[in-house]
Amino acid sequence: MDRHDVETRLERLVRENRFTISVFFPLNGAVLLVASAEGLLPAPLSFNPLLILFGTLVMRSPLVVGVLPLVARRAALALGALVAYSYAIEYIGVHTGYPYGEFFYGVDLGPTLYGVPLGLPVFFIPLVMNAYLLVSLLLGEKAASRPLRLVSVIAAVLAMDLVLDPGAVALGFWVYPAGGLYYGVPLSNYAGWVLSATVAVVALDVAFSREALLDRLRYTEFMLDDLVSFVILWGGINAWFGNWAAVAIAAVFGVGLVRTERFDSRLLRVPRPRLDRFW
Image (cartoon, rainbow, N blue to C red; front, side):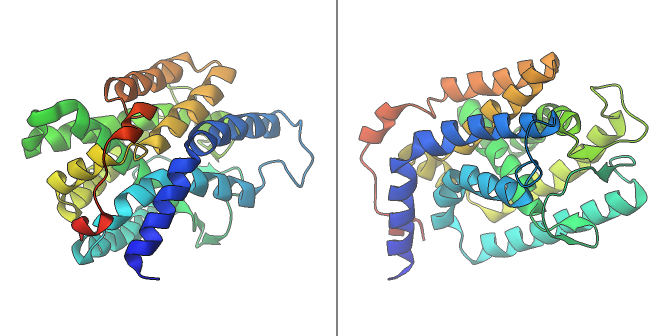
C-alpha cells in the first residue's frame, strides 16, 4: 500500500462519517466537558485526558486528511518548525508568564513535557490552518495580496481565541490567577496570541502553495469540517456559561462557513481528481 492508497482510504473514511465527526463528536464533547466542570461525572470520566485528546484528534481528522496530500518536503519542514515553536512559546508562557500573562493548567490535558502538554500542536496548529483556509475562501481573488491575506488570517486566529479562551477558562482548562476583563481572560493573552498567530500564519503561508490549497478545497468538501466542530463545541460551551460575546463570535464563523458552502452535501457531487495530482 503506497501513500496514495492510504490517502484515498482516509478520505473515504472521513467523507462517509462527516456528520459523526463534525456534529456528533463536538456536541457530545460539549456535554461531557460541561458535565465535568459541573461535577456531574465520576472521576474516571470527568476531564479524562485520553477522551479529550481522542475527541480532538477525531474532530481534526477532516482537516488533516484534506491537507495531507499537499505535505511535501517544504511543508513538512515548516510544520516541524511550527511544532517546535509552539512548544517553545508555551514553555516560556507557562514558566515566565510571557507573552500571554501568568497562567497555569487547571485540568490534566494528557502527558506533558516540562509542563507543556504533548498534544499542544494538535490543539493550536489546526486553528491557524482553519483560519487560513476560511479567509482564503472569503477573500476570493483579494487573497492574492499577501499583506491583506496575512493580516486577515491573523485577525481570524485572534477572533478564534476570543471564542476558545473564555470557554476554556470557564471549564478550568487553564487559569489566570489575576483574572481578566474578558470573561476572566487578561488582555495580555491576546497580545501574546497576536505574536503566536503571526509566526504561525507566516510559517503556513511559506509552507503551502495558496493555489494548491484552493484547488484542494474545491474538490474536498469536508476540509473545513474541523471548523464546524469548533463552532459547535466552543459555541455550545460558551453558551452554557453565558459568555455571549464569545457565542456571537463563534456564530460569525458559522456564517462564514455557510457563505463558503463548506458544509453542503451537494459538493459531494463535484468530480474529484486523483490525489496524486497534488504531489
